Image 1 (cartoon, helix red, strand yellow):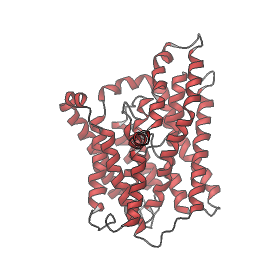
Image 2 (cartoon, rainbow, N blue to C red):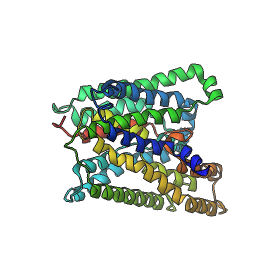
Image 3 (cartoon, rainbow, N blue to C red):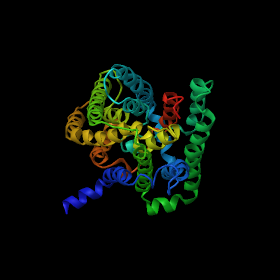
Image 4 (cartoon, rainbow, N blue to C red):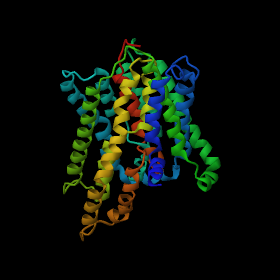
Amino acid sequence: MRLLERMRKEWFMIGIVLAIAGAKLEPSIGMNGGPLKPEITVSYIAVATIFFNSGLSLNTEELTSALVHIKLHLFIQIFTLAFFPAAVWLFLQLLSITPINEWLLKGLQTVGCMPPPVSSAVILTKAVGGNEGIVVTPLLLLLFLGSSSSVPFTSIFSQLFMTVVVPLIIGQIVRRYIKDWLERKQPPFGAVSSSVLLMIIYTTFCDTFSNPSIDLDKFSLLLVLFIICSIQLSFMLLTFVYSTRNNSGFTPADTVAVMFCSTHKSLTLGIPMLKIVFAGHEYLSLISVPLLIYHPVQILLGSVLVPTIKSWMVSRQKKPLQTRRSLANVESSRSLENYLAIPSGHKKKVSIVRVSTSVSSALLIILRPTGTI
């Protein structure tokens, strides 16, 4: 009974394994041009469904409360979208001389460009980033790729806009008219997005296994797993040390938010982005592997750290100089165990650092290999 309950909670992780195994057994079904027609059903319909679902589940009223956390949001945005990818890039320059598969290394770099997961909202409130994203993304694309004829800028930008921005806006508009029904019925938004994501993962690996020239060695996989664990632990320690300094201005609850939102990466948003930016790339699945590894690792590491974090929070809450804001936010830390113990698709979405999504799209396009598609 306990095994069944555990399997029910971890159905998404199990689904990823089954999706990859199914792609290995019969890749012709989900490959480009196959019966599922992923070049249409996945590239457009599936990706748009995920972001429409995100817009539909996004509680607009919570945006106002985010304005009081400007410093917190600013730090997380800078760390996530500037320091993280830059640090990973420098580290990968050293790893480039190793025998690790080069496409896995490129995948590690794309992980560094990903935004925090939607479900980080359990800890952090939403930043008002929808409008900024529509402006920031094309500006970054023009800045870095506007003069490059080897990259189909117009095609990538238009697909990002039509399958990410437009569905998100439509979802928000629809929500205004059925808000009461949504709050009363509480549809399983996370389960819907996760199910669609499994289809994207399946078709991605179908393309891989249908290409006999692609070889993935176990040595590279093990090294990537070790690197991912090291990156997460190092960055969590770095953010903890910084946010607990006497003059940092962060409360203990802020520290918890910084630790996890700055180092966690979104699989739900990341895979669709990769599918768009690297559309048609023969090594897309290899580029996706580090992100597929990063997702369960961040959950497992977080689960291991929960007791220590809770003890630290309790000890800090007992101090007489604790601010009223920290006391009010301690409930966030109590939600942390539930947040970390289950797949991201299962957690109730309270908020998201939305601007990260659009900037991440630009970073991915900047890193996109040229002349190989």
